[in-house]
Image (tube, rainbow, N blue to C red; front, side, top):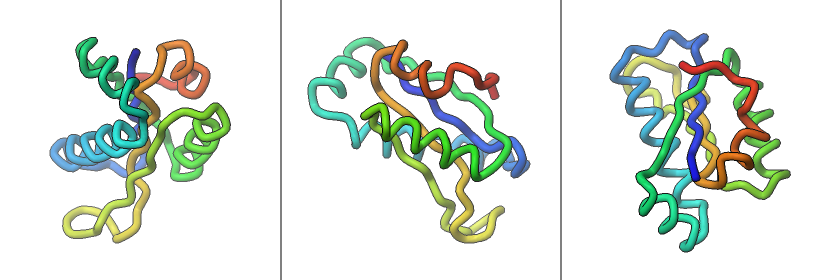
Length: 112
């Protein structure tokens, strides 16, 4: 079991902003998973990987691919209180799910 969080490298987010957006995405996608999946992932150490995308459209393409595969996922839009314009799509997460299922969506991406 794992979860993949994909962050936009093209935005130049500061380290703190990036950390917050990754946390938002992780929690939101987790909340989309069913109870047994949540418990299995939590009990197994909550494995995560953070990957990079280079555009908003890439985030939405990944989200759609996850949706078609039936995987829990979420796209985060920033509130615009600090570094970014309101509504900027910053991150997306897919999973928790099996590693194989996650890799069908994010397997071609580079580590952040």
